[in-house]
Image (tube, rainbow, N blue to C red; front, side, top):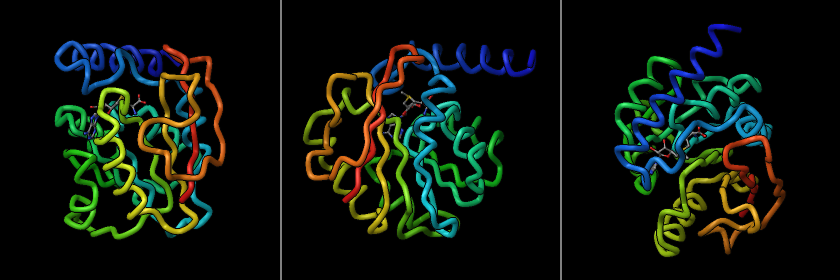
Length: 194
Ligand SMILES: C[S@@+](CC[C@H](N)C(=O)[O-])C[C@H]1O[C@@H](n2cnc3c(N)ncnc32)[C@H](O)[C@@H]1O
């Protein structure tokens, strides 16, 4: 228990440092709560042979929840822009494929990975889309659409809780949406299908 509290405090300090260095890109002052991470991780593909793609994993709050929910670490690919955070994630999740890069290049990055990945069963994204323009969000959504398997889900959280559709999701079918109040700030988790 003490170890878990220490780890949480360390992650919070690291996140705060990164946020001070680049607030718009980091998108949050502290990592997501366990409750928010659990809500994101509740949408794993049924087919365990699929891959899950995580965008913007940060210090790994959602990544850890995916693994706690039984997702095999070696079927997880994560793209994190911040190279310091990507390095931390590689130590923390050694069997996952952690790519230091830009989520907007996800198609190329997935194909260039150690084990190239063409399609994924779910995209779990914590990207701060509110800090990107409508056009940028739309461009990302097109790339997500192209990589998702036919029944795959795109799970996205946003701090703009009054809107069920985050930027870029206008052409996707909304499958579920709920607010997670126990997070700083409260967040809405929305799930989309093609
Ligand atoms: C709001 S934080 C979420 C972190 C973590 N998933 C969590 O829930 O605690 C957003 C994360 O997205 C990353 N990020 C921002 N822009 C990115 C981009 N273009 N490509 C990949 N990651 C990006 C940031 O570095 C940060 O780690």
